[in-house]
Image (tube, rainbow, N blue to C red; front, top):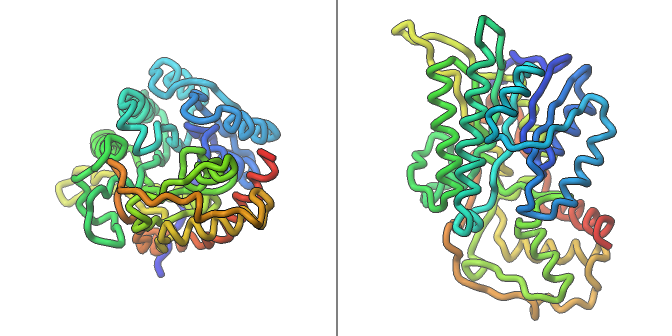
Length: 358
């Protein structure tokens, strides 16, 4: 196995993390502040009400214990604000996790996706570009969130970053593929090292309430039925949040090399990786494990009639029947593969849910 050596050292550096009050963002900030010496992390988040803001506030409360963390409330589409942050703090590494998430919500409210995922990401790219002005050393590495949704109606599994991904089945997926295209163009034009990460169904404690495992738990507690799409014939590559954060931190430290091609012109310092468990789970099995762990944690009683609260329904617009990450490149380049089992991850979620809500 060939593992690339780090070329971006985080010790003593300034890192900008957008979406810092979000699920992945808050967990990333926590690990950076806890493990990297002399680091400064500037977190940006607009704290929107797409889901329960109290969850975001709770995450920020936990992060406030770190003196190395500074929070800025704001929108990444606000060009003046982002320019000010880059001018003031001159970050060495930027991790763009801020985005309007969710496949189904993109059908209901497309404006939010255009503002955050396109205009917002463009604003970050422009700030990275101008970080090199007047001979400044500039941003050493831009890491940004893409999504497994970019694979759309791709029939080949497991999904490889070598696959053609020109058939998005939701606006959300289209915006994430657009991020990759924009990043490639900026890497080519301005020699900005950038790495996109296609996340596969990230879950865990204090996650997003719009995700299936969280929504199912809420509904079961309320005695409501849960809808299992495509009559249960769906598979998802569930990836535990700690595994995702470990992958992000490893990627942050190895930017694509700046090299020139045979024509003497720069080859874009650009890369894309999958971060997934490489182990898709059937939704019915997933629900079965979830209910066992909810009972074990005391969220639901042992006598709960789960069968009476399950409803098998057709596929939703924008959804796909399977997600399955090929993580070969991640393993080869970083010696890393997510490994947390679904049961272990859901157990930690169930225990957190009991402590937070009950």
